[in-house]
Amino acid sequence: MDQFWRGSDAVRMYLGYLVTPVYWMSAVPGRLQEWLADTTLTRTQLLEENRRLQREALVLEQKIQQMIALKTENQRLRDLLKASEQFVGEALVVELLSVDPDPFTHKILINKGQNQGVKVGQPVLDAFGLMGQVVEVLPHSSRVLLVADSDHAIPVQVTRNGVRAIAVGSGTLDYLDLVYVPDTADLRVGDHLESSGLGDRFPRGYPVAEVVSVEHDPGEPFALVRARPLAHLDRSRYLLIISGDKKGNLSSIEEGQVSVEDVNSGEVGEGEASSDD
Amino acid sequence: MSSPIRFAAVFVLSLYLGFLLTTLAMPAPLNWIRPNWIPMIIIFWIIQFPAVFGLLSAVIAGVLFDVLVGAPLGLHAFTFSVVAFLTLLMHRRIKFFNVWQQLGIIFVLTGTERLLAYWLSILVGDATGFTMWPAISNLVLWLPTCAALGAFQRLFNLR
Image 1 (tube, rainbow over the protein chains, first blue to last red):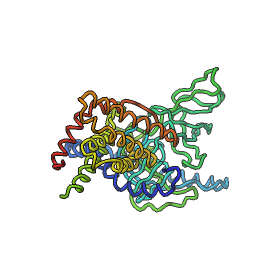
Image 2 (cartoon, each protein chain N blue to C red; image 1 turned 120 degrees about the vertical axis):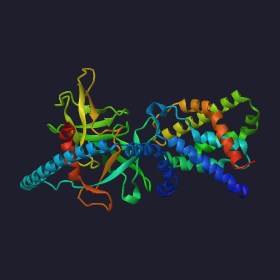
Image 3 (cartoon, chains in turn yellow, cyan; image 1 turned 90 degrees about the vertical axis):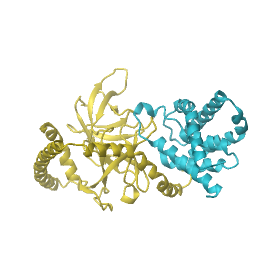
Image 4 (cartoon, chains in turn green, brown; image 1 turned 30 degrees about the horizontal axis):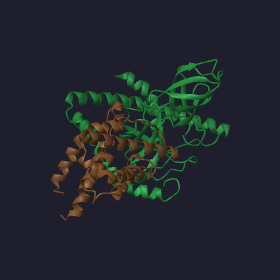
């Protein structure tokens, strides 16, 4: 039906109202456990956490200050080069609702949908890297295909030297496969891969994965490269959806807005902050 | 409550319970043996009330299920209605079968549903993978499901 009839999207949308409560209900045990864990924390633990967060906030604020300086400098250099406008978007904070029960796919359900301005194709991040993209939108929830799904591929480049490749999901959450990498390509274990922005689906420069193994098999036409996704695909609970098209026009998202710059600085500060405690 | 409303209420309630069990988060290995609750529920109600439930209820359940799991709209509507049709053909026999024969029928019916769904998803280019484990766990869970749905039936005083 989906293949031949355009109206099925609208039907799906309305039926979505009927089935979304099921997902809310199935998320109840997890929320209950979270609530219990929150309410049974002792005062000392809370104080400890508060102190730790304050320390982290301090580090992050300092990073932001550096960011601002770097950004203006970057802008100036870009102006000098007459380079094109860089992508600026806004992020919508979403919460994980459930994981797709099909053991063959890696999809998750998030708690924001069409009514909050989510659209098919928007990239989804967590605090550590790129998670995936929105593939289906219901009124109050949407489905996200993770980068590790075997149907998913993302154009990436090595941060160190800009070598481009395509990271294809392997079907397991542990690693992505880099396909069509020539044996002579300058790829090393430990290289960071970021989204290259080719293909117009993902914005440029978000961390995707880290190379964990490079194998040169003389019998194979291409090098066998594996990379570990940086995003915590199976643990992250709060995620970000990046919105806004290439021209920088922002779509209408009213609530829960965070500017992308904040997210980026969070990523930069990550190593420092975790080594702090 | 009039009886048609009661039938509809019980069906919808058990359906939503099935949806809930389908989407409930479980440890990853258990996902492989997650039973197909919805066909089991449909089969149970058709065996109990072949005059009330039939293809239409299977189609409704299927369309809702498609939206729930994000399958192409109509895929499970078709497979569930095939299961419902087969059950309608055999419900008199199934009622008089002993437990083992009944379990065999359940295995074949839900296994057929799995195969059909996989086959159709290949046709529309949406295939993910095929496993027969759900049919086997259906086999194991058929009697408990019957007991639970039977309790439902008595609760709402359906006959």
